[in-house]
Length: 386
Image (cartoon, rainbow, N blue to C red; front, side):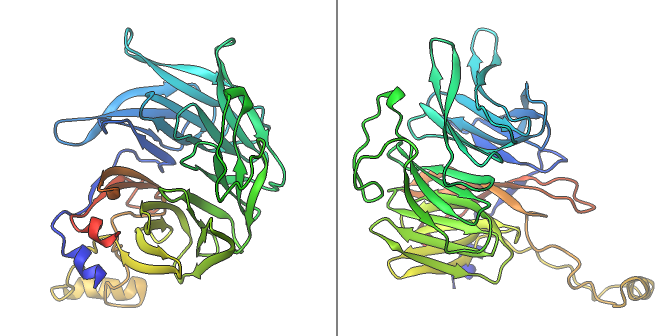
């Protein structure tokens, strides 16, 4: 029923192929007039939206020596942060006078590649995960005009793949390759933080305190997200599982082992629904409740298969000779994406619910060199996510 409602919507997903390389990350500015994209090279591209709604090259950020692994854009302060395999991160500030982006050094102090980066809700700090088995929480040092970091090390035992900030700005969730999802205190005395107690932090805890640890899955934790209120935490892992926990009962973790290929990322649409995406190449909608997780719908539009009724005798013989069968079934993709979806971003909201979101991913198959950037917008998505 849900699939019919989504497919029957007249506001279909739109797609734009930005590069011929896999996209490792993307983020929008405040008014969606620009997008920053990392295309698995040392360059980061800031693209501007044209009158036709398509994004074209605006600026190229050149500072990293290895491929950029993650990007994020702080909408209020208009600052971009990038991290890469060269073990470095940079904060980019736009200079109105010259019309250029100026990099500011970040002292990460890591000896392995940086893998993911996210601004905090207040945009006064950001977190960088890495292969160094630690989390770098970075804040600005005005005396030296650079960004410094504090490390959260124990008990992380492997590469960090995903991070997400709690709406309070003082808690952070971390997903890593040691099959664990953890929640830490990220309150900084250097920033004069005054965190409040909550279900996640019953008593005030110093920076780096482990508040919760979950090991309900048997795979790398690819994506982790707090719900809009911060009361729920969901994560996806390489064992094709979708996991959910409520801060009111941290002992009870709801886990669904799906029959899909592993998910790589997730995004909350409302307090009771979220979407996941990954190697299945299409977003899936799930509902969250006190009883657990329920599958809702697939949010991709299936492409109509071409009929083979008019296949010529020569074409049918060639098909039979090459593949051992005369039909074309199973040789064409039915999804907009041609390979794994690696990131999703909120584009539009209404009544505290996401009504439009974007996806980006990678593609290495012949005939589709690189993957595009796709917008999913459904007029009934708001009702589906309620």
